[in-house]
Image 1: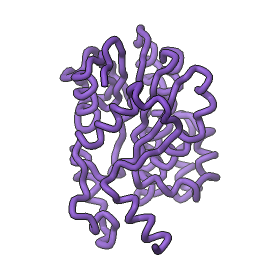
Image 2 (image 1 turned 90 degrees about the horizontal axis):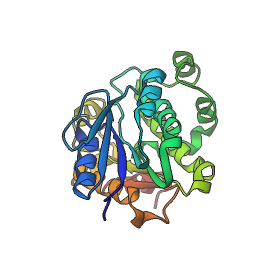
Image 3 (image 1 turned 120 degrees about the vertical axis):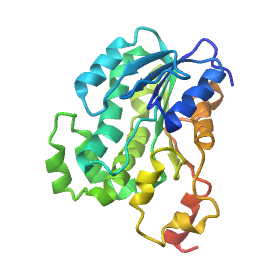
Image 4 (image 1 turned 30 degrees about the vertical axis):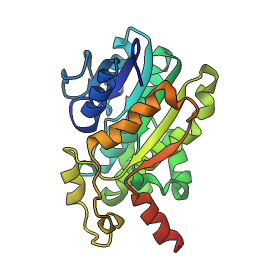
Length: 259
């Protein structure tokens, strides 16, 4: 896969999965614009500060882009160690707001890749809640929303990633006329700096991940499909949410459907 002559924006580029994705894209010839709250210079040709919980920061980041963009990898995200309203703001609402703000900068035929999560596979049961969330901007009252819809520490991360999946699937027609594709990957646990935060909240000894010989993927194993989805080689993949979890989602489905 070659990205020669292409500019790709990678959010969350300062560490973990974002840094690895930027590295792999740059190795294949891409020019990388890194967007992150923390400055990133390694594997990044240009750094633009970004706070996904702040609409003004999002608008400023998008306005700073002064060249055609051929791909957007939405990787920045937070663990449920932060307050639920902030988790939803950053993982979904801010990510969507940035994508919308960058849409005029995206070249026709560009590819958007969202990092969701295997924990978001239950999105169909919460469609009504997500429809309400989709009407909210970053200036909305997220504390009231979480209180009304029982979004708490135990489920806020799952809920935020459900929203990413539903948005990815539901938005396809809006961008199809420009040949822009948007897909999501649903990773299982990843060996990144955020993993410890997730495991600290893992209190269920019967969680599906504990059935696996190796439940944690490496950044390289997750970044590889991101790079593929950002490339022209994946041109017929659109509006898909693809598990990248070593079989974890299969274990979950077998438990749910008893087969």
